[in-house]
Structures are given as structure tokens and as C-alpha cells.
Image 1 (tube, rainbow, N blue to C red):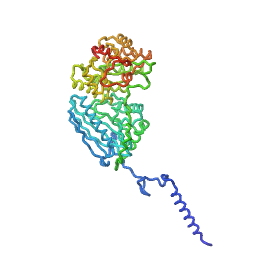
Image 2: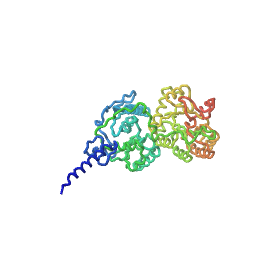
Image 3: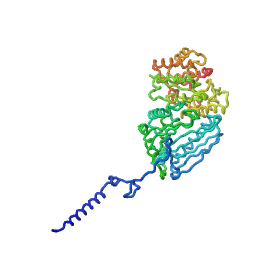
Image 4: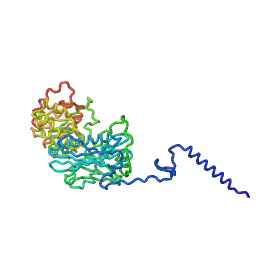
Length: 514
């Protein structure tokens, strides 16, 4: 009998030819389970074993800067009275990152200097918390020293190399609702600590966020921010499973990049110059304008309730009243009370009200020199910025006293001057009913109503004012919403579009406690 091995050989040859033909005609990029490998792997090698992320369980991951190509440390030059020692990283192909850090650190020093008469020194150092998949995380630790001692603060920034954009930490979350949900989770984690207060979903509080090596979210607060400074750094570690639904696309990418170790990293190319669109405002940045209300509509009556000299001890009750009726107001805050009630300032901002500048010590600015006036306004500007992240663009001169010199200073500082059309004289008449009558009698469309939230009688009167205006269908809005865009240095006393609306401005200038 003839052997059948030649048939076997032919069959094997045909099978081999068929396999080669299939491989030659398979579309590029179509990989089977047997052939799927990293683009950098050689045939037969297993997928690359990535190194584990480094860091402590209660802190963000840490990346060795030596693993990042083209990275150099720069020292910040600051021209001011505060002694500084500040460094930050610059990275080849990521010029916008270095520029952003230089700007933010300079602004931080200036705000510290303006807000603290006893400011002595400011030191800052950095570390990397991620460098992978086109993302770089930079965590900055600053030490502020003033007449009361040292305090540490923290901020973490996220650079997207593909777009050339730098993101604040709050950008890791998918909008304001997501940040509010995170705030609730964080409150549960740190709420048991002694005297922790003032936790609100504002970007200035949530400015240092990252992930630990296990992939859980780490939120850290500056010393003295939500607890007495003696407690130091207050932080929360939140399970990734709880925060995953709240993350933005950027947040998901950051989680993936930050929880894997780094052997080497470099930014290949600088993004195109045309790809410079801003990432937009981060969650926790509260707009003083309610888009659901159109004050330009002739069928809508809008008034602006404004409160000076606070915050005071009764301001939280006033905020509750405003919240009950979905009303907004503008608070012209004074610097010393801001220092006394920082959590109230944050709450005011977080609930959608407008913050505006009423100086540090309530002087008559017409009797002050330009330098003194600027210093007094700059201090309150810095105090509010540090508490909320909000850079105010409105001010009210104490007593309504203004002149060309005040106009020049406020123009230079980017602040419009807001006077009033209705003076309740609540500083003089400490009778709730009388204050309410004055406000309601003058509450015509476009009115700016002057009150003071440091008086208990005004807090009581506001309950009647807000309730009655709501029943009339009047929209209670912020000054910015009422006026629209304003010009720095210019005076405004109401939102009525009349050509000659400044004749009566001097009438209000005599009010004793505005």
C-alpha cells in the first residue's frame, strides 16, 4: 500500500499559504487576542509591566522629576516687601504651564501681602504628582509667615499637553452639582474633627485635589482654612468608587495617569498656537448672574437689595431668608468683619450672592490719599479672593463719599462705584417696620436699596421685605445682574436706563453709615 505522507505535506503547505494570505490581507490595526501587543513591544513579549505609583495613603501620588525629560526648576522673582523663596517647574514643550504657575504664584504672594499687614515671608516648593498619558500634575506647597506665625497652604494644577491648557483642581469634577456632591462626601469624612467649619463647594477651597497610589481621591485644605491653624493640614481620602460618577473626562484621565508609576516622560510637541481656547471657569466659580432672569424684559421688575459693613452675626439668618425665596443680593463687605467671619463670606458666595468691596476700615476715601485708598481697598480685595477665589469688580465708597481722586483709584483697580437710589436709613432708625416700609416704598424697577446686615433690626426687616417683594413678583437680583456690564471708576445709583441719572447721587452721600 502506497504511503499517504505526500498528501499530509501538501495539506500543511496549503494551510501555511492560506495563513500567510490572511495575514497579508488583514486590515492594519485589526489585532486578534493572540497578536494584541503594545506598539513598543517585540513579537513574543508580554505587555509592559508598569511600575506602581509612589506615595502615601493620605497624600497624592509622587513622581520622580528625574523621570521627566526637559524639566527645569525656576525661581520666582517677586518685587515687593515680602521676603520670598519660591520655585516652580518649567517643561520643554509645555511653556504655558510655566507661565501659568509663575502668574498664580505671583498673584498668591501679592494677595498674602495685601491681606496681611504683618506679612513677613512666603516660601513655596513643588513636586510632581503625575506625568503620563499627556498629563502633568504639579502640587505646590507654600509656607506663609506673618505676625501670627507660619501656615502651610496647598494647590494642585493639572496640565493637558494635548491642548496646552492648565486646569484647576476643581476641573476634575463634572460641574457644580458634582462638586457639591463631593463637598457632602468630604464633610462626612472630616465632619467629626474638632471645630471644622466653613466647608462649601467653592473653587478656593477645592484647589488641591489628586489621587493616592490606591486610586482614591485626596482633598487637602490649607492650615487655618476650615479648622484652627494649629490643626495644620486637614484632608479627606474618599473612595474612588464614590467619586467616579462625579469626575469629568479630565478627572477620569487624571485618575488613570496618576495611579501608575513613571519610568520616563516627555512632552513631544508644543500644541499649535491656534489651540489656545480656555478650559473655562472651574466648578466652584459662582456667577453673580442668574441666567433664568431677564431684567431687560419690560414685563420683569428687578431690584437689587444691597447690604453694607458686614458680614455680621445675623448675616447667616439673612442668607436663610434669601434662600427661602430664591432671592439674590449684593454684600458690600468690610475687611475686618471678613477676617472675623470667613465662613460666612464663603457661604454668601456659594449661595449665589454677589460680594463687593467696602474697604478694610470704612474710611472716608475723599479724605485719604490715593495710596491710602488703594491700600484699604486692596486689603479687602485680597481677603475675599483668598476665601472664595472671587475677584470683586464692584465697590461702594463708605458714606457714599466720592470724588475725582476716588474715581481714579477705583478705575485703576478695575472697580465700578455703586451708590444707591433708596436709602432705608436703617443705621439711624433701628425699627424693623420702618426700615421695611422705606425699602418697599422705593422698590421700583431698577432700584438699588441700601441696608446694613450688621443690625439685628435690618435682619428682621429683611424677612418682611423679601417676603413682600416675592409676593409682588419682583425679582431680587445682584447689582451686576441689574446693571449689566459696568465701567471701572464710574458711579451707578440705579438700573434705570436714563441719560441723566446722576443728579441725585449727592443725596445719598450724607447717609451716615453706608
